[in-house]
Figure (tube, rainbow, N blue to C red):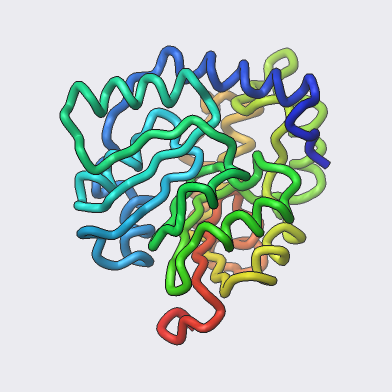
Length: 256
């Protein structure tokens, strides 16, 4: 269970991301980036479409959506991130991107949105049922959403390693203190409000061993080959640490 927003752990998470973003300059994501391309394939034409980038950070994807013609609202609770992005938007004279510093649970205040996007945001937010309700209220009746997320289905051993060893000694940790990968139960909660399609674009599993244990210094190509080979097996594929969640209204016949 992730801590509530007013606990010390969550304040530490806010400090962590402010520190990360204070040293990161905004830079538009390439339109050829696989996550951006997958989102646009799900969304369709973006010209004049109202898009929310939830958990935007310094706005790499928000800037790419704006460049594609969307009317973008970029939301993040990090003051450092939103300040940097706001300054960039003004400096570049971007008129179709609005930056908001707020919690993801407040997203409905800024809707409705035709499309919603998020990269590694859902697994940070609790209570999750409140987030699902907020997403439902923020998305237009015929809207669609796309989330690039991690996956708690990587296996118990990997989760134990993540909980007890990541960030200690030799082993790196890249996230904040209170995050936890998206669980199957949380995906099921999304299915209560939306039509949901889960896509595993590639297998990111054996490369975790290479990265976290060997720091990519011992045969990284071999571990990448193992991921490519194992991807052909569906049961192993669903253990990938990376996944796309494609959401649409339950009555979207084209999506179904």
